[in-house]
Image 1 (cartoon, rainbow, N blue to C red):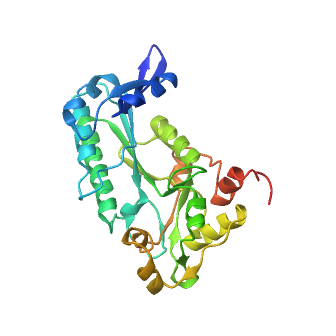
Image 2: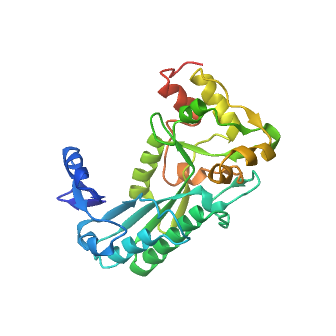
Length: 281
């Protein structure tokens, strides 16, 4: 969240943990105690911010994002909120059989995880239309960065988790965490009202090729390739859910409307940078 005070932006952040207060203050951010699972704790949100960046994940179960519903309820009492940016997921598109996907494609989520995100999108867009608030939805694919939990390919390579053979493999999409942060800031300044933007880099990689690329950059063993039938026997349902969807995101709006110049146009650049190989082939 941010508030314009005497011509300067003041950053505020919602935290559920008491131990999170001091680190935020040391970073120059004003901490706000509150919990999106407990709407009674969100009363202060109505009057403290002019713009809101909503990055909180939905609950782990169900098809409805109650956390976003509670946030919208709190913000609906505000007389000053002008803009909301929400980081959703590209998973709302569902399986597109490898097709190139722009923001005009109708969402068809295949998992409850994506359905919760689509529910959050709908709640925020209704709020925006009803209250004259500019709401920008960022649809985000796989986020990667060195040391990021779940987003550092070295974790999976170290485990030796297999990937699909080429003929069974799916297209995946990626964005470096730093470019995602820059996209969020750009959307807070230039996002169009009630607009969806794909936040993805320029790459068109199948999942196995992404991990082969990472293995080469980090001098690690490439993952074994297996058939889809074999994968069903050795991978968890959660892992298999990511192998049931294939799409290639179009990022034209990201560049033209938000004016973002990617610092990491593809995973090769981002991974080489984290390996200390920037500028080297």
